[in-house]
Image (cartoon, rainbow, N blue to C red):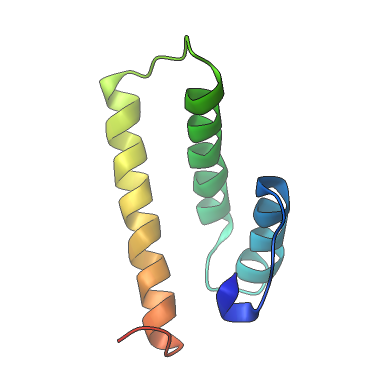
Amino acid sequence: MATKSILCKSHQAARALFGEHFIKSGPFDSQDTKNFHALFNLRQNSDYDPDETLSMAVVEKAIETASEFLSQTEAYLRENGFIE
């Protein structure tokens, strides 16, 4: 969001603005937004539900998805001159 000078005051705003500025206009696609929301929901549930338990398969998939998202984010930052 900072790459486009977008300020967010809540997680909900960040999610909506991410979709508006990075999904609709690229560089991310609709599957990325689904993955982003799924990871966010896992995080929220784990933070706020003390009884939440995750299977190893869910955790491994979340790590894989997050790693892919991180790679895409790094590529975006490199392509736009924010990192080398």
